[in-house]
Image (cartoon, rainbow, N blue to C red; front, side, top):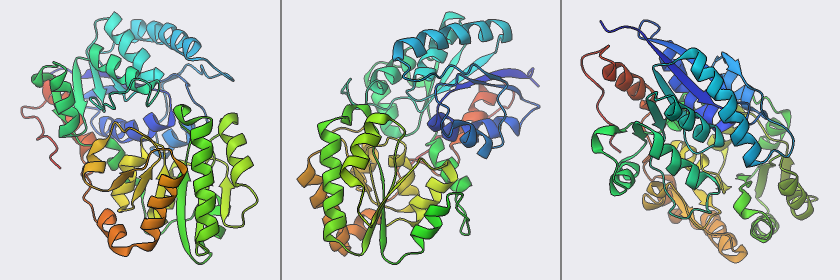
Length: 385
């Protein structure tokens, strides 16, 4: 049997914690194959520690880089400097990064500087608009460029990479680890940690869960979204809106200015990951500009109205599980209204298949690494939607 290998997993945000959590768990299930080192940059702190602890993961190193009003330049330079020292000391055999964050970018660059093989989980997503999502679209392309092995969640993301000239032998379709995390987390019987949610969900009627936070939507686009949502609440007395408001001062100012004071619009502080998963499963539909919710909503067969002009996850739009609504007030209002009133349209979206995964992505990634290092003789079969 091949020698045990040291795998370094680098992460720093709540989405990375939830999407890499199942991968780290799977690595920990095979201590005979791998020594796993979990390195945290501290790019975010809100809900990050809770999300990681939800998967019973304790970081080996936390750089604690986050500071108020941190710039991308500060975060990037600090993360590269901090990670460089750790990688030089630990000398891992393989580095795993995820997605499109500054942490992923810095982890990939540092691995490249040290000539250590890099695996990029969730590779190949593209909107083909470098300003949307911003800065994530460019981050992801840069991480793909320095990575040695590209774990594409879907065939579409693999095709994106092939069109850009990446070698097919370096790409493996895994499915989306967010699906693994959601399926592991969801329970038929669950007590919410946020008491307000328990009280709200005991009320009669239908519930729309909303999240809005993207930087490219700051200003006029965000205000248009909020006005559309308030009109929905005004015109549909059986509908309540649940909105865990992002901690960004810009988002909170716009949200509370436009949406507060309505008896059926509930503005909450951010909620933890298990609460969010169970809130999604109990909602009528989802309204969001999020990336990750595009993958989670189809798990629970909940239509999602996407408040963006572009998406790097077109599979769900093609499958008709997600409706790309844009950022114009009347367009947003019209599609939500149709979902609330047109049962056949709602059912068509709710019954759309999940193009993102089957709950086995994390296992495929770890088995692929074991096969790559000669620890096991056969690798996993790729995910097919």
